[in-house]
Length: 114
Image (tube, rainbow, N blue to C red):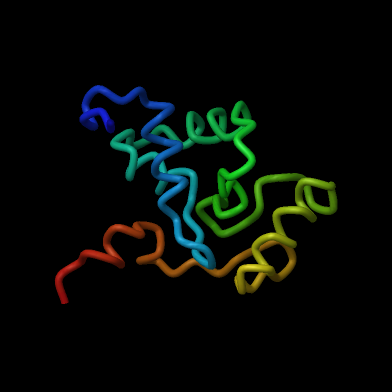
């Protein structure tokens, strides 16, 4: 049984928001924080990701707001993230993914009135 959103911990709300990102799409740390109802808490998102050991968590879909991979260039985690993104069809060039201005809020892209 799912708990009402108001009774979920911030960590659980962040993990839920990350799990909701479809394959082949990306979001920023700040975008995830907003979707979890925690605007301005991008660093908390990074901490929750760093503490999680859930193998099914699509951590690789989370990037800096400018589209860059947050790991140091050339490191093993950096290469792994780029590899996973490319496997989902995401174009990664020099450790960066082009993020549309509207892609910053996946919710707006999915549910915005047209």
